[in-house]
Amino acid sequence: MNVRRRHISAVALTAVAALGFGTLTACSSDSAAAGDTGSFDVVASFYPMAFLAERIGGEHVHVTSLTQPGQEPHDLEISARQTAQLEEADAALYLKGLQPSVDEAIGQSPIATKIDAAELTTLEEHGTEAGHADEHGDEHGTEAGHADEHGDEHAHEDEHGHDHEGGDPHIWLDPVRYAEVAEGVGKAFQKADPDHAADYRKNTAALVKDLKALDEKFRTGLANRTTDVFVTTHAAFGYLAERYGLTEEAISGLDPDTEPSGARVKELQKIAKEDGVTTVFYETLVSDKTAKTLAGDTGLRTDVLDPVEGITDHSRGEDYFQVMEANLTALRTALGAR
Image (cartoon, rainbow, N blue to C red):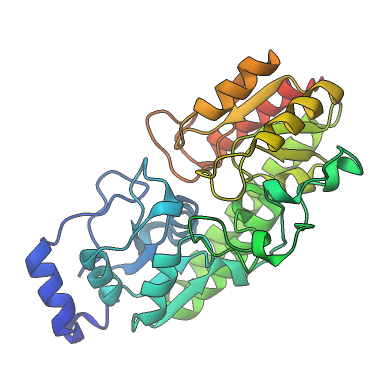
């Protein structure tokens, strides 16, 4: 593949020469930067996209990730070197609305195959802190955090400028939606690299089967529970909550760095007491300070609910499936599932 290798722009070559053509870490530690690898080169925006590309592409695809392990993907700013890597790649796989700098860089790149995961499934509006009912009524104002009742000024763009106008981007945390994305990625790979289409179809089918099995584990594992409500620092689990009949109450909004208001903290304390909440969840890539403060004030425990935005040494597993099963275990404990 790599049919554009000898047509790289002068700007890209200058950027590479100035910054050094180093490696970008993908899911495997020895992944080289996108270059003349002899494979179908895919640049993925962050871990859930890289995971799909590696599982579907198998031996035929070389994957690099724009987001380093341990880096908060919402905060990624594309470097000149990464822009040059996009110039060279055969395909880009990303999730529009999650990483604005990635959206801009891919939009401006001449790359032939641009795969937006957000177009491969349906996105929905899931609420932010402002979207909850003030009096803890009507399922706390949302079921799994639906639309913001205070209007568009809150619902679509957080205070850090992250544009979520297309809806909540955290689709990979719902195994069913993630499977829909996988099927779309598989078809895109088949079209872009027809010589290996049969293997892409086979790998896609195997991945979708595994995701359906994961969905069934969540359905059965959460079937008998004492409460439907869970509290998280980051409103990343709206799709998961909706899929399994749960209610996510987030301390922050879709942006994990947003600080909650005093009114929101008091509301969460009330919700925790009335709904039998036992646990405040935090995630591995963001400070646990807010979660521990709320838990301390309400006599609750804390635990990790990982949005699987990246795999690090602190992750409870080595890949998407292992971390999601660890999330299921944590949810079962917090919700009193038997």
